[in-house]
Amino acid sequence: MMRSMYSGVSGLRAHQMKMDIIGNNIANVNTVGYKGQRVTFQEVFSQTVKGAGSPQAGKGGTNPHQVGLGISLSSIDTYHIRGAVQRTDNNTDLAVNGDGFFMLSDSSDYLNRTYTRAGNFSLDEDGNLVASNGFRVLGYMTDSVTGALKSNLEGIKISKSEAVDARSTSFINFEGNLDNSLTAMTTPSTYDDSTDPHTLAHHGSTKYWETTYTVLDSLGGQHSLKFTFIRGMDDQGAIGDPNEWGVIIQDLDSKEYYTNSGTVGDTTPGGGADMNEIILPLIFGTDGKLDTGSTLLHNIRVPAKNGSATTDIKIDFSKLTQFRSDSNASVTASDGYAQGFLDTFTIGPTGEINGVFTNGQNKVIGRLALAVFKNPAGLEKTSENMYQTTPNSGDAVVGVPGSGGMGSLNPGTLEMSNVDISREFTEMISTQRGFQANSRIITASDEMLQELVNLKR
Image (cartoon, rainbow, N blue to C red):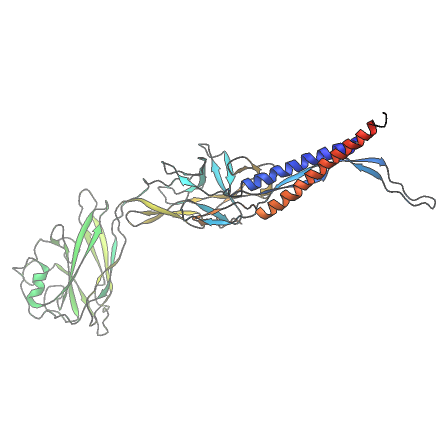
């Protein structure tokens, strides 16, 4: 009699545990990165009243007689399946598209690690990428000297103080057209009274083409250069072929001109036929393209300014043309830039954090790391959407998103809870009925005991 009562008690306890799990699942239906759980039961123990007998002397065998003694908890499993994705467009919100956990740490040496699927991260005042509880997100930062990613895990830091050093201009490339309808120079001149290349052009050429461009020295200082293209002028300032263009380069800051040796010359053009400020000829063929006899490349040396070093610049004119259309020759490519500070950043699917700087440059700041486990179901939940390793989960295998079996990242999205409300409510109904049925066992056993007591009146 008592066995049935205790079986009912064990059933009540087991179903109450299942109801606790269901309640927690429903409570976390909107928790970022939450993984639902399930409960399974098992029979506790069976008391053998009579053992099994084998067939003997024409008699058949007999089965064992056993009485079950109730129910116990078999397992509480975690569903490590991906939840739905919610779009947020916040650049620090991340979801893992596949296997993998973000790595978090609250220790200065980053060795005390926990793991999470919740990617609702943010930046603190120092630029540290942190979870909602302040734990730092781990990854690989870029070495400030080599520019390569470091090999050791550390907290990701995206600071506005991150800077890109200035880089001097080493080349500028011209592209575009020089209009062959411009009047070529036809009258020689000594240029003795000239103070500007445009005046030189007016001595024999009614039109010219000019463009300006700013180059940078080693400290990011600006030097404005003016390029003047004069049709029909050779590199000595004399009358040339109509398909020949002389090029004059002037430093607008110092008002000086560059000589054909590439260095800065006088503040005014020289006299006579020796016009060395016309630094090179550009000779075009009948097809409108530069002749191979032209000086397609030219080097100039920008003088030091405000403590900077001298800057050697290679000028490439090889892509210029001379067709009967408007002149539009200009600099289309260059490599110099001033110092810049971090303006904004993006996180790519492979975890790379790409910084966009105020000088227009891009640079990889760091890269997020992920961890995978041989048995993610063996991880132990701690708190605040975090997990820790156990002997049955295996050690973390660390890598970067999109490689080694790890999922890629979905920036600007969050992985939501994977709880299925319809399944939870169905389980709730069956659990409630199971609890109710087990309570009836206790009630019926009690009534039977009452009847037994009442045998003696």
